[in-house]
Amino acid sequence: MTPTTRPPAPVDWRNLIRVGEDLLNPPGGRPTEEHIRRAVSNSYYALFHALAASNANVLVGTPQGAVDEKAWTRVYRGLDHGRARRELQQLQGGLSVEAQYFADVFTLSQENRHLADYDPGVAFAVYETAVWLEVAEYTCESYLQADRRERAIIAALTTVDRRRGQP
Image (cartoon, rainbow, N blue to C red; front, side, top):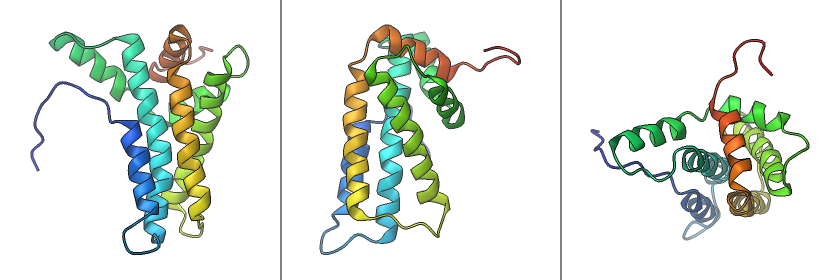
């Protein structure tokens, strides 16, 4: 497959939620274990892509040209799953309710995704997975309404590597 080039656009976290819901409600029957596991993953990836887009938007803004597009894409793609989890876990106190809730749900959702993707001994209930999709949707909507400055601080913490010995 040869990808084509286009102006940068984030993965739409809302569509990831919708796809997860569709996976739980396949035409003609009950979802398979693979459908359910993929839906669990989608609940996390919705949060991840909402954070990546928020980071790029607050640090770069809407791209107006080639240089902006390059910077926006670098910030968007600069979000690392492990670093984001570590930094969000350390954000205690001094945050709005929306930002703290996002940090907590992001961490728990990533743990669920790891179980869904890598642990064949774990089973997820359809109802529980549907709730996680709803929680992810609410959490993304709430976080994106949080103060822009606070989201910029979170963007810096989750995209820029620390130097050894730095707080």
